[in-house]
Image 1 (cartoon, one colour):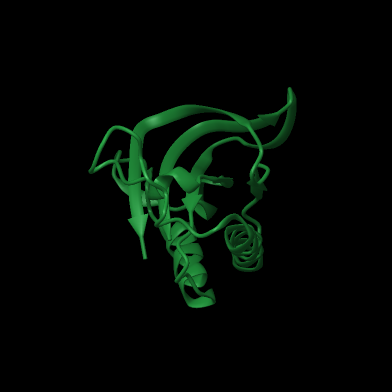
Image 2 (cartoon, rainbow, N blue to C red):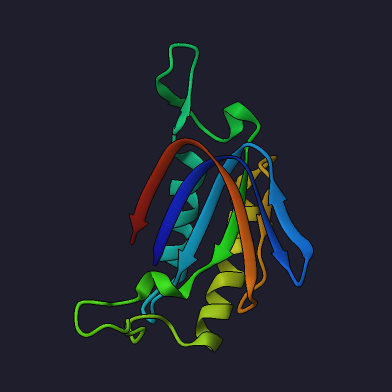
Length: 147
């Protein structure tokens, strides 16, 4: 599982002009899945995202987590995180989970996040849709997570 995590002051996803998911202050998580991902992988990643201290405290140090800043998470499926462009000019996506498996992993990951998030809001994009993702960086703070 690969995640690109962006700290934002707001984020939104639109499909066909309609907003399907949005958050204010928080994190946008672009998530990609591999064939070997398991419930253990999803749980580890959910706990990592929910527990990261990437928001600034009064001394401008990254000491606060999502719960401390009343933040939310916007989860967007992104199979291209498994793109391999090491050869040729067109990336290969053979490292990504096939769509049926990836969809099940995405749904399960969102469910695990919601189960573990408590009061932290979890919003989503729409799996396998052409999405317009809009975000306003807070920082910028961008992390790459992999399990």
